[in-house]
Amino acid sequence: MGKLPRQSIVGPVASAAYLLRGLNMLRQPGLRHFVWAPLLINLSLYGLGAWVGAHYFSAALHWLIPGWLEWLRWLLWPLFALLLSAVAFFSFTLVANFVAAPFYGPLAARVLSDGGVSVAREENAGVFGALAADFASEVRRMAYFALRALPLLLLSAIPGVNLIAPFFWLLFGAWSLSLEYLAYPLEAQGMRFDRQREVAAAHHWEALGFGAAVMLGLGVPVLNILIPPAAVVGAALLVIDRRRMAVS
Image (tube, rainbow, N blue to C red; front, side):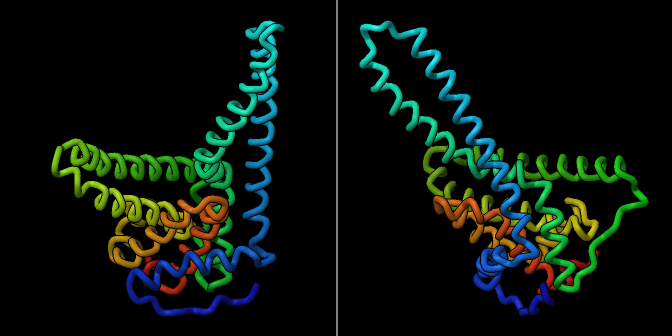
């Protein structure tokens, strides 16, 4: 894969377009395995879960429903299939992100390297040192999100005032998603959450535009399967084009 073209960034609309660039790049041979490997693992897990669920549901029907109510089973099976489909639909993105998380760091690092941005090496810290730093960074990230979600929950509970709550929730969602996916290319350069937040805040309009595009993409059925890896690639491209974001 050749060097990536560098582009200038102007405001949130241009930064939102980086998600589309990420989607387009997923077809490149050097990046495909970062996408399809976790997707196949995820589909296998859901297939296994569906098989186990169907097996135990059939056993439960055999135990609970007597022979003279055999016709009731043909009514309950479609309901089970509908419930299983609903659970899969609403949980697929969450599970996919969990399964694919170990692939996203190397994916971001690959895009950065091809774009001419150096990737941090942490051999001196050792495996346990790196894991401890990652854990501490993740704790700070979760605390940051929780401390800002609580006031929004309170705002949503106040009659009258809660009319403006959806607007703030949208802003919070876009900001949270931008921090989540910018974390991969920034961590590849050795930045932990505190520094990541400073970098995103210094380019808040660009970060919000990118996060809003990701949030919109995650709401599109079927397409949302490819949005997380596309967001990782898009965030890496955003860091490449905004070189000063990569300076610690």
